[in-house]
Image 1 (tube, rainbow, N blue to C red):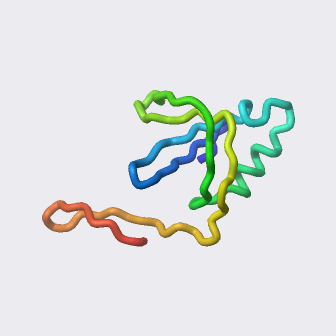
Image 2: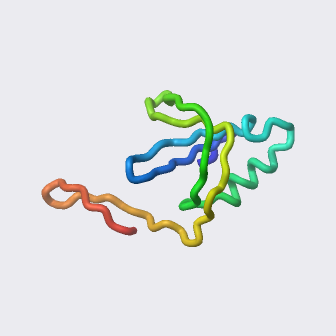
Length: 99
């Protein structure tokens, strides 16, 4: 998600999820911000594997996040990931399925 001068991404593995916070001025300290816009609007896709370095913090909503100071695309996704929707059955149990 791009929100003004910042972008957010969520990464996950088998142990859980964490939010990444990218600040435009940290990644592009000079006056030209076109690289930031190209990377986050055109080059990165859902399913891409990235490596990120930074420090951890809690957002105002209490979500644990990493303030990214640098990142690298490790592997580009060849196909989009399936969208998983969660519904509940008659007993109230969560059921996940592809959309």
